[in-house]
Length: 308
Image (cartoon, rainbow, N blue to C red; front, side, top):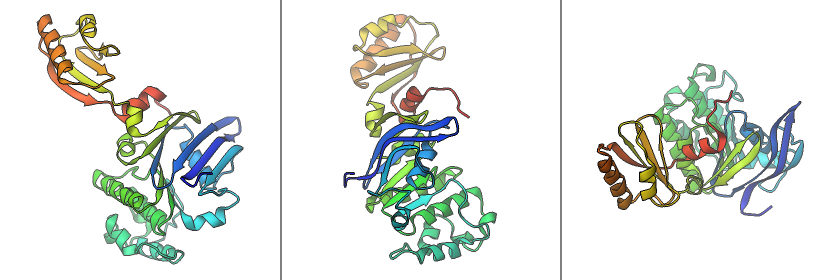
């Protein structure tokens, strides 16, 4: 395993009976970076994370975390790795202040518990039993528990699920600070904006296998989009012919037109579109320029159908 890699997975397979949750997945996560693992429901994200954390044993393939086997070397890894679970793991009667104070005693240089409580908006609930905290508060306490020991590597499984916008952005700021301090973060999330904002590297999985990886910029391809409204049913063949090769022009839904260009939108493209509309005797309404997002790339790679 390279010293530059915090996590190295080669040919990971994990089955549950006849169901293959992870099917030959290989990926890397470099030290000091945020790596986001994205995929539809049932894609194998959580199972992959649980194997890396040592909670599940691989059926085939190899997994190395900080150079160690997470199953065999769990005792050596525990002081170096922080884990935030989606649910469970915290006693229902535990009070945030007491719980973090106890956890802090297990580490040589922990973050001050009161600081974490304040940063995550839990100071006023510090004496409230876990079972009486809101779902968002429970989520934030789980995050605090994962990072209190200043771990080298942190696994965050859906860290902002159920959080309000203010709490979500506070969590994003904290993750960015963790990375800036030199820690590695492995993140799973359904919020594509979250991955695009935080991740240095993105891994997209589907049906337990890798379908794409790269930086957010690499996955979005730097494409530009121009959208406008006009009367429905226009023949766009003439517009397509006037634009650079490789351009896509389509009407979807009715009366709404999309122009997508591999090289991005420049003033000449805007002039070409508006001139063509003038030739057709129509007014291009609500004309706007957009960039292709990580969500666009994700949907193209994994499909639009809903997954249970």
